[in-house]
Structures are given as structure tokens and as C-alpha cells.
Image 1 (spheres, helix red, strand yellow):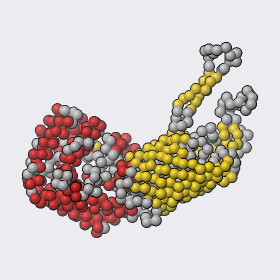
Image 2 (tube, helix red, strand yellow):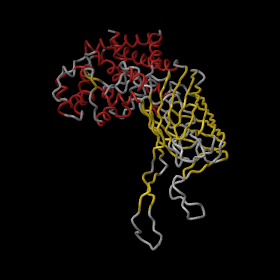
Image 3 (tube, helix red, strand yellow):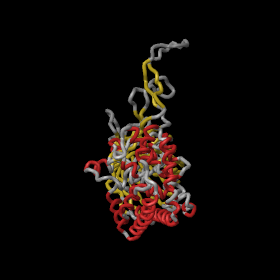
Image 4 (cartoon, helix red, strand yellow):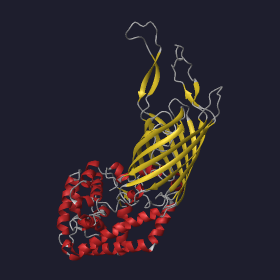
Length: 553
């Protein structure tokens, strides 16, 4: 019995969306999901996912019976072992357990949020754009990326002259594939065995797109005649705005090695070793023993769920409101007798304490994943009024666990094409950089701060190239320059940049980087420059946080 209960607990903590008979259940409406997760009744919040899954199954198939819905109904029936974990979560507040364990249970999902909290302590993730963007807080590209999806807004400039604001959307190719195909996109260490293509191609691949929000695009169009005025000069063409944003770059990253990534084989091996270790084994056994005791009390004294009746309630109201009210009454009636057992208070308190220890063991396994990280990166960059470039970057990082992480970049930038009679070659620049990152608050805290110190060196064999827009005239004249004209701007040679940055990491995946930088010049201008950068990013490490507003809770 103990092993079975332990498996149920682990599934509740680490597994993805509820499934029915091995298949993914239909998505529940956002209104139902939002209402039950914000419901003041702890029993409704604890069983929210299971209630929502049942309502979704009934909405999809009105004729579904108790046999077909057995997997879902088992999780709502107190007489069944599958309902025990959430029963403990639901009854803990009324038994004053959470008051004694306030640091553990400020959230109703303190244990089920283990993956998301652990992800916040990772120093390897690159969530925003790289240092070549017109709006960025990043000088050195990190070895890691978003687990599922991240959105970052950055303002500032590091190596370029034109300041701006960028939005960067990053995603993992395998998680998108699983989302589209319906194969548990919220999984990490609990993923089913992946095929070769997923394991070797999709899983290590991350893609990001960067939009320059401060750059207005334009398009030249023909005019058909003067609408007013008496100017004798005929205007044949005019530039019209086409939008206040522009795709400024696409980045593809392939992680050869990342011991921090919960999807990676290295991290899974680390977690497996932690599970086999005596500390986590003892914690797991403690959870199993206490959960067994609660399950035994429920099995002998709790009223069984009237399965046909609850299905009828769900059929009569597709919004789920009646289902929630019905379950509240069932919870109240069925839990009265079990809660009179004096032993259940001790058992539930024990489970809550062991859950906290189990969560800490996950964090410890993450912290033990020190070592080498290696990533390949390709950037397709479209800077404003400059030639397109293809940048190839090697990223190496080493995390010492106790002393922080060192990251090294080496990259080469090539021009997309060379116009006829060009006085420059395909090589744009070569670059090397390094960054030191260290968390200066506890990695197990919900609120963290990370200090980063970075240095960057870039060498250009020629000055930067500036594209002269169509319609530009020679200064002091009315003579238009020919289309396709390019000019050298700035100076060839070395570009040096240093940066100090503090990243504030809040709960739920929110990160706020604040940086200050100095450079001896920029890509277009000569002379030293001091600048500031600030941004905000949200790391959707849980599918539920993105599509249901639950932030993975």
C-alpha cells in the first residue's frame, strides 16, 4: 500500500495535466479554471484540476458513464486512494496545520510548485535577447533557455548606438511539439520515453524571436497627384508607415549539455540518484506511511461518492458551477466522520512536513547538478539601417555549485550578402566575452537576487556599414542619393564593454534585470559611453500558468 500511495503523491507533485484512460482530457474553459482556483473554499481549490477535468470530459461526451470516467471519479471519491493526497491538502487549513507551517504553505500548491520554484534558481537560463539587440539587458548569452515559453521586455543598449525596446519570445521545440500533438506538454522529469527525434533534435532545441518595438517601419509607394496646395514640383513617391514594430532577429539554440535542464538525461540521472539516497528515501517513506494512515481512515469511515449522480450534475450545467457546489456538499458530508478520528490530525501534519522535506530534496538535487554546460547558437540579425548578419556562437559554462557560474562566449558574425564593388568582406566581427553569476540570496527562497559581472571584447576588421535609405539627399543640396548606397561609419578595431547587473527573481517566474554598462565606443559612434539597461521577463515553466492563469499552482 505504501508504494502505491507514494506513487500517487509523486504524480500529484510532478505530473502534468490529468488524463483519462491514458488520453489527454479536453481543455477546460478559462472561466471555470479561474473560478475554482480562486475559490475561498480550500476543498474546491485542492480538487480544482480534477473537477475541471471531469467537467471537460462530460462537456465533450454527454453520454459518458461511470465506467468510462472511472479514472477521473476515483480522484474525487474519498473512499479511493487516489483522492487522499488532495484530501490532505484540503483539510490541512481547518486543522491548523498550515498555521504551524506557514513558510511551507503560503500557497495552496507549495509542493506541486516544486519544478517552478526550482527553475527560478537556475543561473543558466537565457530568457531575453542577446547583446547585439538595440534593447537588451544581456551582454553574454547563457547556456540554458526557457523550458516551455518565456516572454521578455528589455530596454537599453550595450554594443549598438541605437537605443530601443525589444520583446523576446522564447520556446522549446519539444514542448511546442507536445502541446500541438497533445502529449503532456507540461512534463519535465515525468515525460514518457521520447523517441530519437524528440530526444536528440526537438528536446535540446530552443527558438526565440526578437521584435524591436521602438522601430517604425516604412514602405515606399507611388503617389497619384497633389491633393492640395500650389507647389509646382510633382512628388512621384512617398514613404508611408507600415508598423511600429519590426522583427529584428531570430535565434536558434541547441543544447549539447545542460545539467540544470530537468528535461536532460543528466538531470534525470541526478534526480534518480537523489531518490536512491537515504535522505530522500526516508522522506518518501515518511510521506507514504502518513498518507497510508490517512487513506486507511478514509477508506473505513468516509462516504463513497455517488458517481452517477455527480455525472448527472455535470451534464446539467456545462459551466461547472453546479458541479463545484455539489462537490462542496459531498466534501462536507463525507469528511465529517473521518475528521473526528484524533489520529488524522497527526497524520496530516506529518504529511505536510514530509512534503516540505521532499520539495527541499528536489532543490538539493538541482544544486548538485554542478558541472559543464555547452550550447550552440545561431542568430539571424536584422539591425536598423544596417546589413543583415548571420552570427554563430559557442557557449560554454561551468557551475561550481558553491562559488557561482562562469559563462564564456565565442562568436563570429558574417554579412548576409556583399553588394557589387563592396570595399569590405563577409566577416563582420569576431567576439569573445565572459560573465560571472552568483545568487546572493538563498536558492530555495521564493524571492531571489542574482549578481552578474560581465566583460565583452569585439574586433571589427572594418568600420560598421550603414545603409542609406531611399530618398535621402546629399546634405546641403537637393540631390538624392542612389538607392543601395552604403557608408562606413564609426571605427574599425576593438570594442570593449563591461557590465554589472542585478536580477530580481520573484515567485511565479518573474525576473527583473537591472544593469549598468560602460563601453569604449559603439558600433556606429566613437567615444566612451555609460548606459543603463532594465527589463522584465516571465518564464512560463508550467503549461497551466500560460493557458489557465494558474501559474502552475
